[in-house]
Image 1 (spheres, rainbow, N blue to C red):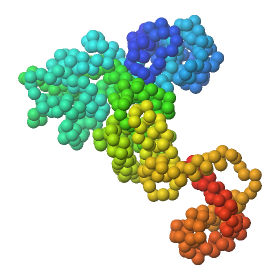
Image 2 (cartoon, helix red, strand yellow; image 1 turned 90 degrees about the vertical axis):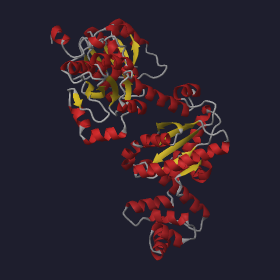
Image 3 (cartoon, rainbow, N blue to C red; image 1 turned 180 degrees about the horizontal axis):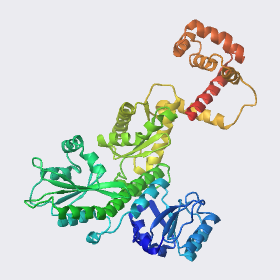
Image 4 (cartoon, rainbow, N blue to C red; image 1 turned 30 degrees about the vertical axis):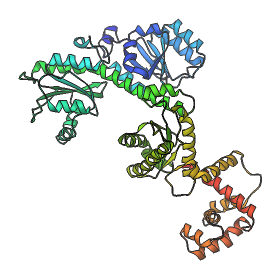
Amino acid sequence: MSEGEQADRPGSRQTLLSLLTRAGDFVVPGFAAGAVDRPVSRLVVLDELEPPASQGDLLVAVGVDPHTEEAVALVRRAGEAGVAGVLFRPVETGSGNEALAGAAAEAGTAVLFRSRWTDWPTVIGILHAGLSVEPEPRIAGVPLGDLPGLAKTIALQVGGSVTIEDMAFNVLAYSPVGQDVDWVRIWTILGQKPPASRRDDMRNAGFDRDLLRSDKVLYRKAQGEAPERLIVLVRAGGIPLGSIWVAAEGNRPLDTPANREALRAAARAAAAHLLHDRARREGQDQLLLEAVRVLLDGQGSAELLAARTGLPMAQRCAVLSVGAGSGGPQDVQARGRLVEAAFRHCAGRGEVSVVVPSGRGVLVLLGGLAKDPAQAREQVRLLAKSLAGELARQLGLRVRVGIGEVQERLDGAPDSRRTADLALGGLLFGRKPQDFARVEEVADAVALLHFADALRAAGQLPVETPVTRLLTSTRKGDVPLVETLDAFLDQPGEKAKAAKALGVPGATFAYRLDHTVVRESGIDLDDADARLLARLQLLLLRRAVADEG
């Protein structure tokens, strides 16, 4: 491809710096910062079987460890080819990268790193969208990310009242309100999105679908108090980012060829602004979640988190540990909706909270609790109860909530998280019908779980036991002997209750226990030590089954 042909490609006038500005916190600058002034025209994912990267490329080094000699050699080759920059996965904190820094300085190629909180598909999508955006001279005076300034400029160019919205119709910015009162616009601005009745009308008319499919400026006639409007979708690299709405003002005509062309040009210019704003907001959200995770792990700063979230530093706090389902593969999709469902529920109750994903489900950090300790504990208990019930209804899964102990200050959140996780573990491991509990309410299950984990860590037993013999027999396809023994040990001396728990006739259960179980395993049911050993091994078995889902 000739230089002239390359200059005509989308994004060819961009520099690496302008692209990184649009990518926000998704990409972290590393070494050879002076190289960011280089032009960049193409995004290339490293593949040894494909032609190598060339001048003006941004090379995405998926699968290359930045701490290795392979990374150093790659940067040197990139410099020889005129590559603008090389993007690696995140580096380990405190790691020495002197060799990589030296190679970048020598090659004149920028070394960049993917942010720790995101993934390759997201970063590649953001960069690809950023490369597709071209500057628009008529809006060049608006600083990148200044959406109110952008809305005001578009309003002056088109001659109307402008509202900029994201793809969920949330208002991102609007031009100053003039003397002509447009009540639909006023309510949209006050509510930060169009009124529900207005959205329903547009949805029923198929307007949402038409907007997504069209690259043209759409027109909506005046309806009641709502004046006529021009609407255009803002895209970057095929990714819809939002929309621009222009409402007529006074008696000035709105739907003219000049206004349509001006709005199309504005949409091209707005792509860079909306992409930057989206990356910034998503980056801030992810950095916030990371700050919460670090604090709850006992390694972060409560003061920093308070400054970022508005959670009161000097007021009581607590953590809820929420899990959905049994943890098996069939629950994965539903559990993925747990974060949003928990967030909406807490926000709907007016709780001062932050919700973050966890290994078992989600963690809910609550702040600004009541000054009185008893009232604060009751406040947390009631939220746990409502979460367990409402989320179970929404997800179609059993939801259990471990309640952490209330702490006096935000810096006590790690201690509350520890007790919340213990309580959730007890709920998941135990057999009581509770869906929410504090750790002291499930202390027996928590202690048994601790013993079970310790025994499992100790490794295999040196001898064969009655339970291992039953497991061997069960694997051969015999009747469920392990379940029979487990039910009997749960109800010692109460064969009728054990039979009822398994849902089998009493006589069948008694015969299976006294003849088949005893014969296959050799267990002495009158020996207290034998019963204790069997109980512990069955606990280990239940723990292993739960871990496997």
